[in-house]
Image (cartoon, rainbow, N blue to C red; front, side, top):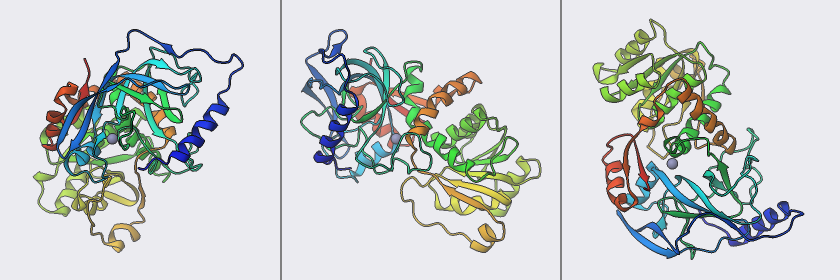
Length: 400
Ligand SMILES: [Zn+2]
């Protein structure tokens, strides 16, 4: 999480070199009236955000000033709010944000995918490159973005506009930024969590087991499991069984494209539950399973839902949820189950996500219903409290 100032200088130097244009310099382009101060929700102590006002920073030749429209609340924000595990306080949180470019430096011409950028465009940020050549945009064989820096989880500095829980954010040269003007606000707020699932399905595809006619079980119907179902549907997989313990979430899983649902509370013991999953597939076990809960018991159980020679993608243990017990003979070896883990995403997955969101809407999946609560910036403490109470699905801060 540390930003090495020497690295930043090096990155800025490289970016400057890469962006030299024959037309030479001109003043930063700006739109409308930009106020002289910006509001930032600063986490100043555990469970306490304060709305602070800072002078609007200067926009350097490689920088972009964005007027924030909204930002999703992530589990990571909730952990930071409750316990500060990264030791970042005081910190401007919020990494699932989006907004409109109001001013940009003369060297900024294109986004990270090569699309032109202009004042008025809607953007999202992904990661901030450090000098790690193994994190790249388009090479699937390179590592995921774990370990890179991200706006919303940076140490505070004298700019202060480092997180999306704010009304302005300064996106500095060397960051990744994407032009997503063709997506509505709710879709843009959902890009980051959706990218997690695009990556998981890409990982699942590497097993060679996930096919059009596969029977797929998705265990856990929180936002991650629900988006997983939607991603599978948009890629043409139609035989999906959702497993959860809450009837309301299972009903939503059907809306997102699940063909059948299994409430684990209706079954006593794993043998009975596996029988329930098998019955939901019309007498077959799953060809492939996605484990989308952080529960060790759920991880232990899921092998029983999978046929011999099937596959598993574990993506629920985003943080350490403890050890899970499996029987290597029965669960993996004798059944020849191929397992992959999935964590975060690559930059390439980010770009794929924009198309996924359009496809999901195109086939009528109610993706926007994932955002169950919207709060103004001033009520950010309430928003985080709602998240900690595990109420609703996705909670978002939306600036009016
Ligand atoms: Zn997140």
